[in-house]
Image (cartoon, rainbow over all chains, first blue to last red):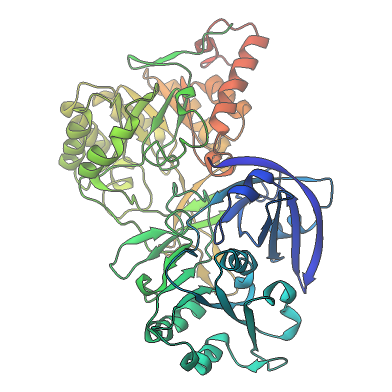
Length: 263
Length: 303
């Protein structure tokens, strides 16, 4: 059952330049959500802004009924959200969308994230660890100040490689270049499965590299949304079979090979 | 206890709140959020003869107090609507209004006769007012003769109530309303979206791929109230008021302006169960005002 629930804010803290992590008391959402799903957040009580804002779920603490969101403050909606503090309540609709498949027949996950595409990755890693699977995270940002939550990404059975476009830390270049450099280490037939989260240009660049890897890839898309539940048909993406699919309800996780980025 | 039931062209509604076409899918998408049987009825997404994939992206933009949409009547087509979507509405205790469109008057009539033949379908709403498609839609609804032609064709295709949905994008909406009435419409719903446009000043690109789009939401409510008020003076048909209803107070405004029922739309994207709160608000208001039947509010402006 999907529901709109009023969730108390536990706390909120800056995680990086213009990036915030908010913790919400949301026991039902925390219990039901799966990695890759999102919540549709009402940032204002009135009509400015009018729409809810979709955020992928950063992490959950099921035992304590806590849900975390990480987001960048870019406009009025996210500015209002960034102003919420302990004691406030926020209306969340969710969990929404199709999650990542973490139960498939693979034992090592390659996760490629661009910028704030990292948001759902800690939740994904938690699920992979529960399945007893190993993971390698490749994360690229523009400059090193944008890295956050690195401690949640490192750990048992998890390795991380970082890239910066300005060369301020790690590999100098885009995360897709970094993947190209390391691709030889990840070969088909050795139990790999790929996961990609980030902006459309990154996914478009990754698509042929992913196809060459020989193993399957799941990609999580970002898109503006109105309803968030597949009703308004406003957030569609073109598939290779020429049909449109809604990012909110048919996605946001798709088979990377099936997406048509040339539309 | 106020009687909330109303009649639209012989169709009894348990209350005057319906959902607007294009904002409620095929009726079941929101079934997991609340009991749809609490509503007076639902108007489905527009159904056409053939499936339509809709317009290129971007299709949506948020604007002050509203939103632009350019979906382009994306729908599964009448065949799949009847076989896959309509059966899911069987158990619902609410009225089902199928919204129809076509490229020609004949197509409107064919979709109508196939939809109306199904016992679950209670009424037909004729979309002659979509601003986001090149053929059909607005091309009919901005011309009295073309509106009459489509209305007459649909009228001939069914004995069930025919509701013609009007566009505000005309010089004189009462002229179109009279043409629909003369051609056999049983009721009118108004307004469809207002033609709008928004531009990104950095890229100098329109925010919508097809450039112009349909504006909905609270920003258009005063326009819609005025159109309902004008059309109320011009025709005898019952009216369904549409445009930016976010709260029950907005719905009461439409009733007072002359609408017998209302449709909520953009509201669902913000609050999926919003229409139920509108029903409850109308009930509370009516009881506080000592109104025996909600129909007493229709057009009940003070002198």
